[in-house]
Amino acid sequence: MLKKRSRSIKYDSIQTFVFTMMGLLLFFGTACAKNIEVVDASGPCPQDRKTADAPNSIYSKTNPVPPTAENIKFGEQLYQQKAKPIACKYCHGEKGDGMGDPDFESTPPARNFTCTETMNKIPDGQLFWVIKNGSPNTAMPLFSDLKDEQIWQLVHYIRQFSK
Image (cartoon, rainbow, N blue to C red; front, side):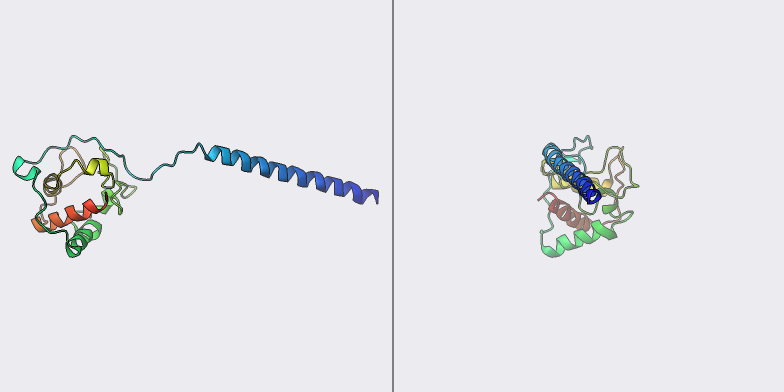
């Protein structure tokens, strides 16, 4: 009988220890969690860039293509898969957050289109011009094979990311 009692005391001691440790982990885990910063998995925001400005005749131009669902859909198709030489998503990410293919490296990093603070400062004409002509000293290629209407559709789609 004495042996059973000593096993019970051992069991109770282990059980008490385990519950105490669980309680401490819960307490400290909760306390620590309050100090954890949530890191957004997107590119830098805001982004300070020195991209060359488009010529004055284009820089402030408003997108002449209406922002219809159909035009935005065509822009999405170009962005996600059809644009040549490379679909935009490979560098700028499927969600436009600047987090494209992990093997893609760029200095400066790809533009984060979800950053409202940055995107509000870039006129439609500037976006059009950069897409059409590329951006020297960055990884942004020129998309000279796209028709102007397609580039304007892309601009509408890109604008959707920061809304």
